[in-house]
Image (cartoon, rainbow, N blue to C red; front, side, top):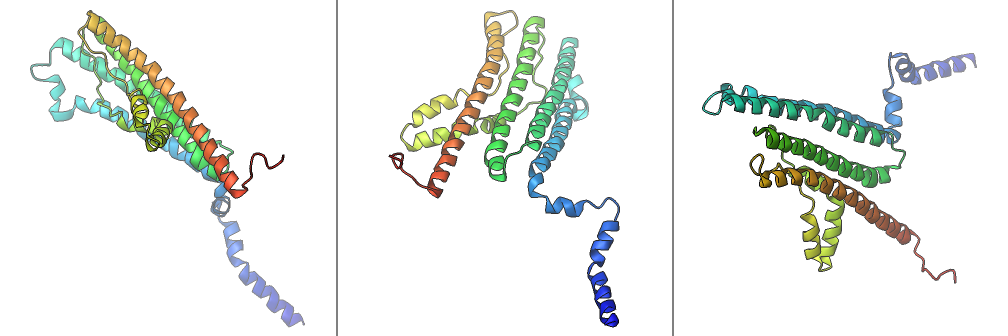
Length: 268
């Protein structure tokens, strides 16, 4: 009997050896992380957005400063290298370097919001993340629009050419920020109401620099239009958020009805 007990004890120790070694490894939290991975999806997404915020900030700064040494410093040479042009270049670089930090903070705030989400996986993937992306795109577009408007105002007042030193492409952000209306207009197009959708789509336009010479009516209207575009972007942002949440609510209700169909007068 004692021999059998010793054999059983040794067998159990052998089978428990991986757990014993795993428990003794320093900073061993991997097992708990893997087992609790479903509950930490939101936190992981938040971390991804934090990394994205830092990467975006660095890329914007690099893209803005790169013309200073590109082509052997061509920005500071040649016929255009006059004193007023050099001042314009410096102001433009300083202005658009500053935008990197609020844009990074916007992305970081979106990530923090997603990281603290208590929604289940379905709502997180199909509601929280799309709404967060719509808001992020809209806020970034509005921030770029604000800096573009300030740049246009400086150009109008000082007669300097303070332009967009980054050459940012707003098309992807515009598409991301119009997810809600894009889905709605796709449905309307299938119902034969595509013209209404096309008309509303034109309202979601990216920010543009003011046009016209300094101290002219055309220049003043261009500056005014740059500031108005910020309001238009924010209005479209909130419209898209509401439309997407409304469509998701309809889809969610439809799925629940399919799972447990009933007629409205069933209780009568």
